[in-house]
Image 1 (cartoon, rainbow, N blue to C red):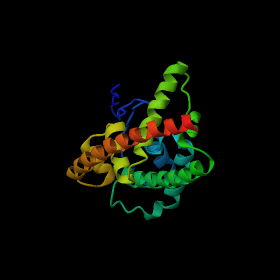
Image 2 (spheres, helix red, strand yellow):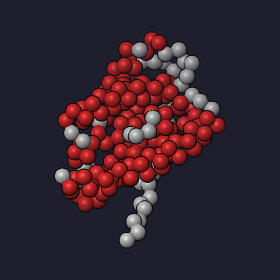
Image 3 (cartoon, rainbow, N blue to C red):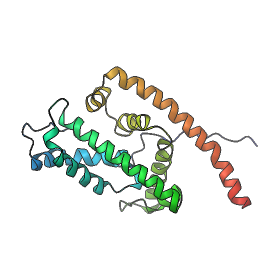
Image 4 (spheres, one colour):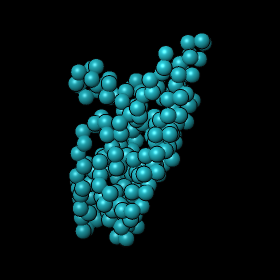
Length: 207
């Protein structure tokens, strides 16, 4: 019987409410106003960049602690949003590295996926959304950080080329080139992941 090839999971899967609210940086850098204006934006970045396995609230807390400590170093060479995104991205990368080691030592990513949060909706639909999110992030996690970042911003966050360019402080042309290459590598990573899954299932049955 011919094997039916499945399509890659959709990167536009609405596993989290899609609300992107660009926030203008306040003129005067005081901790209270920065938090009030940017907390939802930072939370959104953290949620998307981290995926389903990390504590978003804890990441946001760490981002603002670092921002407060380094506030005096912000010179306005980039926007405040770009500066905060850079901090968020570095915090998430560090925690993802730690989480990879933790999962490697204690169990598989599939076991961790069982702890995805529920939003109180129908349990079957929640499970389906969680499985879809886990499937997307399993492939994303096989990519390098630059590909992963650009796909999350452009595809999951559905930000425009100009918005991503402003956030990353790069040219719109560079965004388009990165996105094209990242999409290609995503498909290859998915196909590689799909190719290994039947063998893993066969080994599991044999074992």
